[in-house]
Length: 94
Image (cartoon, rainbow, N blue to C red; front, side, top):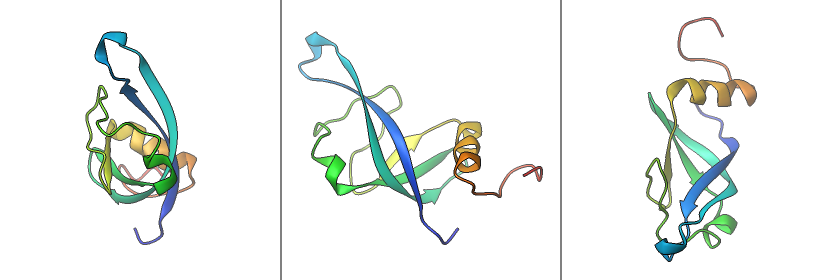
């Protein structure tokens, strides 16, 4: 997959201090840089990185680095790419 795909993701994280226990959601924009069997790797745009806490905690864990691994069920990944108009992969019914 050569052409890069911009994608909007909603990431969840727990705001610190933990005792407040607020689960926050933020929509971020990024570029899909890799597609694995059961997750996609997204590079988050720089302007969003400063808004996210240094340590991001979420139900599905990922590291906030240059590339952020967003863990999604495989069917969700397919759904995203169908929505974005990208075909390919899977069962041949695309």
